[in-house]
Image (cartoon, rainbow, N blue to C red; front, side):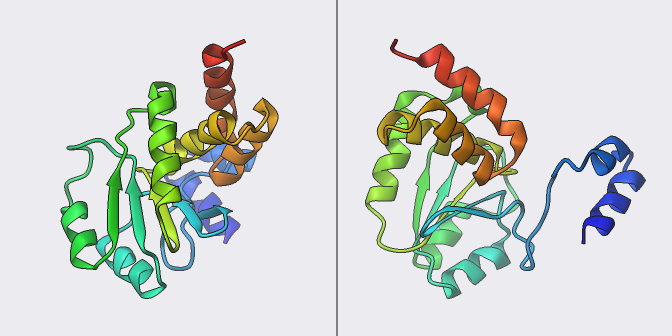
Length: 174
C-alpha cells in the first residue's frame, strides 16, 4: 500500500513526500480519508462521502461533528443527509488550527458528552480535527502540553504538532 501512495506522490509531483515517509491523504479500506481512532467511540477523519455516511450509520455511528465552515463543501447537503440517516449533526466551524478558540474546545467537549454512540469528527483532511482534539484535551481534560500534542499527532499527522504547541503556548494562562 505504501508503494502505491509513493508512486502516486511521484506521479503527482510530490516526490519529496513519498521519499520522506510523510503521511498524506491516506484512505482506509472504506475510503475514509485519514481515518484514526484517537479515543474510544471517536473516529477522526477527513470529509466523508455520502456513501461513507451511509456506511457509518450502518456501523452504528450516532453523531457526525463537522469542523468545516459553511460554503467550504458543497457536493451534498451534509446536515440534511445526516438528519435523513437519523444521526445527530453538530457544526463547529473552524478556519484552521490557529483560529481555534476555547469556546470551540468547550463546544466539542459538550457535543462528545451528549453522545450515546460512536462519533465521526471530521474536517476536510483531519488536520483541524487533530488540533481541536489536542486543544480540548489540554483545556478540559488536564493534559500536559506534551500529552495534548501526542493526542493531536495520533489523531492525524505529525504536521499537527507544531500548530498545537504554538496554540497552547500562545493561549496559556501562565
